[in-house]
Amino acid sequence: MESVRAVLIDIDGVLTVSWEPLPGAVEALRRIRASGLGVALVTNTTSRTRASIAATLAGAGFPVDAEDILTAPAVTAAYLAERHPGARCTLLNSGDIAEDLAGVTLLDDADTDTATGTDTDTDTVPDVVVVGGAGPEFRYAALNRAFGHLQRGARLVAMHRNLYWRTDRGLQLDSGAFLLGLERAARTEAEITGKPAPAFFETALARLGVGPGEALMVGDDIESDVLAAQRTGITGVLVKTGKYLPESHRAASGEPDHVLDSFADLPALLDAAAGR
Image (cartoon, rainbow, N blue to C red; front, top):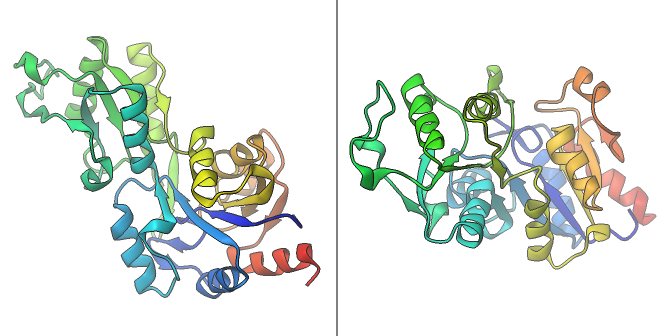
């Protein structure tokens, strides 16, 4: 902790819930900024672009801009360019994230029979099915269409495996639940680009110019945020806000380095570690 030079911070459930700031979060981030630590907001959010997220957070008082934010869609675009260059992709996602998928060839699935999932135009058959975050778009026809593509050999790339997230209406089902079904039905395994993929954390560290031992990760998801970061050598901090559940904590595959009631308590933890 005494060597920490940068902080990676999840957004949803840590700084905000349904984009409303959690108590003390704005002031805590301001204190962290003032201390000179590097900051990266790392999120699996797939419903908004980096620019939109930054505008919302800044409007709520958080001292951030788009360059501080690393999203699963942005990392996915880089992943597809590296691992599947030139691939034709179809996207199953709730929200417009095209801006963060620059360079990705997205096909229009309009030429698919929505009842059977059968392609009526071979030019629309994708090489990759990309799964983002869940919402109303995850209806039977869309999922069946994706299943059809996978049966015909398309690769499956998913931005995350989150089963649920917290909103002001409580926990809501996320795409990880549907992803499990697609994998089992199509007898394939998704390539994951967002948290908990090690490459996601490595990308954030590279942006900040620090090594794993010089950073800590703050999240409300014990597996995807905290323990995944710890496996890459980053100090993990679990907060009891957002999607945190005591039963998930007890059943987790490991133990966080630190557990805090909320992000508002992080400056005090950092001050104690630095001997301030």
